[in-house]
Length: 288
Image 1 (tube, rainbow, N blue to C red):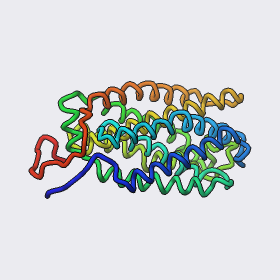
Image 2 (image 1 turned 120 degrees about the horizontal axis):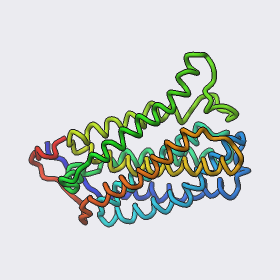
Image 3 (image 1 turned 60 degrees about the horizontal axis):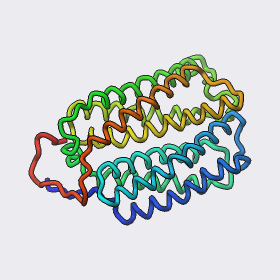
Image 4 (image 1 turned 45 degrees about the horizontal axis):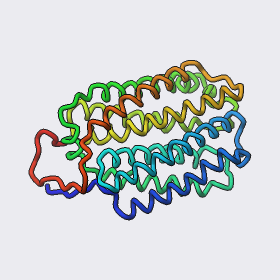
């Protein structure tokens, strides 16, 4: 069936991303420079501070730079833009439902809505077949292995905490002293993020075009998030809080390896310029 897709973000998506940039700078800046804004427990406060610091220093510039490249027709820029948007979607979805109500609540909700719209609409416009052709015959084994490693290691880490607590009728250790009534991050990861990595790795292994598309986006998102977790850990340790060693090791390794795998995957993408309209004929080599 003939389709028309385009790599360059549409005007509504550009407007949504620009609004996201402004609101993210406000939200993360307030968290870094006015942490008293938060009304959360001390344990959660240090995590929020670390997340805000990474978002302000890395997330905001990365979104601005990748959006600029995407508007110039760069495939790398487009998938990086979606990946950073995915990171912000995850971040502010959790803020909107996890943090205690504060004056920036409506900002979190607005960011949740803006990034959800941008991510979904941006993925719908992504030229998956063009991206598959751009990667060519480059080996994708490292990207497949990394995504499966993320799913398995993080899944086991969370299940080791929430599983025994569910069976024993107790509260997971991750919730201790946080004031939370449910493990929000674990819920998002186990229900959405980790299954997405497994599906993406499977499609990539099978050579499907959308496997390449989701891999490019998820690699950026995973690497950014792993760095955010390390920033949280650093702040917590500086505050004298205990952090489980397995979490430090797992996210440290995933962050370091993720940077290498993500950079390698993005660099092999042919960064052609201008909008792409795929041919209407079937392309068995990249058919999804």
